[in-house]
Image (cartoon, rainbow, N blue to C red; front, side, top):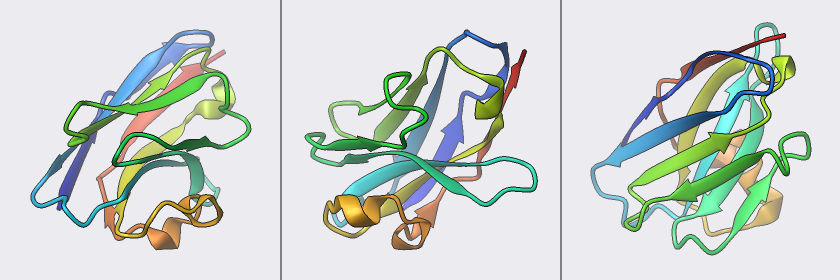
Amino acid sequence: VQLQACGGGLVQAGDSLRLSCAASGSLSSTYVMGWFRQAPGKEREFVAAISRVGVSTYYEDTVKGRFIILGDKSMNTVYLQMNSLKPEDTAVYFCAASLEFWDIARVTKAYTYTKWGQGTQVTVSS
């Protein structure tokens, strides 16, 4: 599985962006797709996750109500719709794929994801 993330950019506070993560290769063993972000000088942190059957989603508290994770019908492309962006959302955003079954206690953990995209920069100016 290879993941390609895109859609980042420079926006103003309050604007919206949609990130995309296109997966290629066999996804038959992939159960969870996630988005993480890493700001300069900070550790990579969980943003959102979705089960590949598209039934379950989970969000980090600071993005809940502003961000939406969703996938296309095949779930080979996963999106992160980011609304009401804030300067503190500035980071490099990574998509990732996990072979584990959906478990809220684990979908937030970066080490449970085995495949990662290259990252896309999101910069929000005040």
